[in-house]
Image (tube, rainbow, N blue to C red; front, side, top):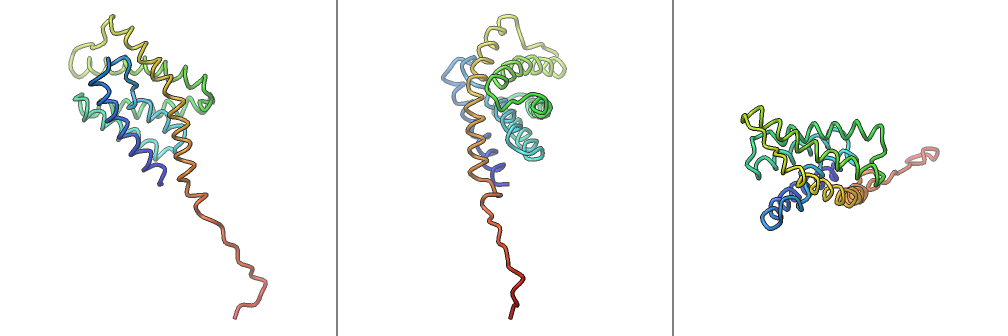
Amino acid sequence: MKPAFTWLAFGLLAVIVQGALGRGLPIQWVPDFALLVPVVGALVLGPLEGLVLAALVGLGGDLLSGSLLGQQASLRIVEFALTKLVSAQIDLHRTAPLLVYVFALTLADGAAMSALSLVFLGDWMLRPHHLGLLLVRGAVGAAIAPLLRDLAVGIVESLSESEARREMRLDTKRPVL
């Protein structure tokens, strides 16, 4: 459970860093950590921990971005489940498939955000001139994804409870006083 809490704290910190970077850099050069953390969490955490991570990171993104409450959270849950399904078919622990998957998911995420805005606000937010920005953001996210994956694997391995506990064997053949 410790890796899940640590990764959750890291995920919420990543969303805050994303917001801070968004104030100083053009938006296309800011990695979408709110998308990347649940994707990488789906690769290294169990289903329950990863689902909670995706929901809380999405909710944190909703609170910090000013979007509709639950908009990013619901998308992150769907993207988490999709990542679990895809990783069962394709080895996303390898770099090339992860790059392609994150790039495609970033484009799909932009379209899904616009679709949710259309449903709830009545306005399709994705304009044709945003496509180039979204392509650059997808490439930046894809470049960051292997680094986050390696970091997540390191966190989970270093905090793993299975290695922290040592098995103690008792020899029961000797008489006990």
